[in-house]
Length: 548
Ligand SMILES: [Zn+2]
Image: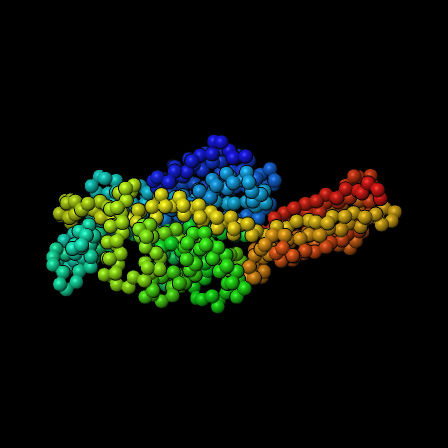
């Protein structure tokens, strides 16, 4: 039954923390047997890291079921992920009326893993990757701040004879790279803000130390300067540490999806090296899954190492989530790059990555603004350049494009994109391993002795080790069977509990047999508990046959 009071998810503006929290709470209230709201920890500034657990709790707790994890907004400006994650949470609840998925598995959805950074971007449109350390203000360093009282952090353009930029003759809203025949005026740009303890010199650092939390994961982590944004050590950032601890304390998680914004793409491992560093069977399977993502979204499949401009070499992102997910968790992990405003303007990712010169980039930006001019329903992505008396720099101009709007597709388009990525999640999550007990049979042998037989099988698509890599990792638990004789019943066969190892998908099964002596008068001969690892837990109680 579709809950009547399920909240609407408006795709009208970027959601501040309070709005995300209010929606999550309302969703949980609307359907308490399907949705639980909790937290996995606290952000550095003390905001709760909210987790929506979505499963049909009448069929068992989430911790007993195969589980699929979605996180969004690791990068502060990549706000689309929060909307897409919340869309999935809401749609899972609605679709429960026509689907068994929440009966079989659980979803863990963390719509905004970086609430502090996102709040800065939502409220100011300022620039931060994941976090900027502002605890120590340093001399000659510009710290972003709203100066003209409009609440926004815009761009300051400052006339200077050495300025590398000039007005675009075709679209004066834009600045273009200065060339030898470019007429003045020439400009430098800085983010709106004040320069701490400025000595008046030319060398101005922008902001404190930056952190990129998608470089803070444990696999092949490297310190700065080898990996920009890495942090001090793997999981030095409390939000990433909370997420890693959550993942490792939930061993039934079998699939993970992260939401980001960049030129749209369906990203898969590896994030360093090449496909040849991974198990070949795993590469084929992850490619096949990623192609399902491409089919639903139109976002091209791109291994992370290839997610770059055509003129660049392959990239190596150390401490990246994808390599962690594959090498340390043994899972197929994906990220959707949900697009940018350039994609919304009808420019494909291949075209964005094909840009190889300043002139080509400038032409692309002119197309974006020309497209934007034609839109009837649109956000204000551009603020007119306006003179401003800066307390340190003198007369400058404030204006330009808003970073928070440029970072993602239009919210109108995002609704469609979120529906498409949801379909991928259904397909990926629908391949979950599913450990069941079949063909249960209790047979009277002689006197008080019975033979118990049962088949423990994985009828889900994925094997319980998910990837070939996962077969060797201790984190992915093997299928364990515990045998408990009923009251007055004694196990007479040598072995009660069994470790079945991993079970292949669909066809993987083991027939188990026990002999017991039922001397007492209890009704139940035994109970078989199966801890199926990523295939979920199950149990059967076997009664004494009525006609021995
Ligand atoms: Zn990102």
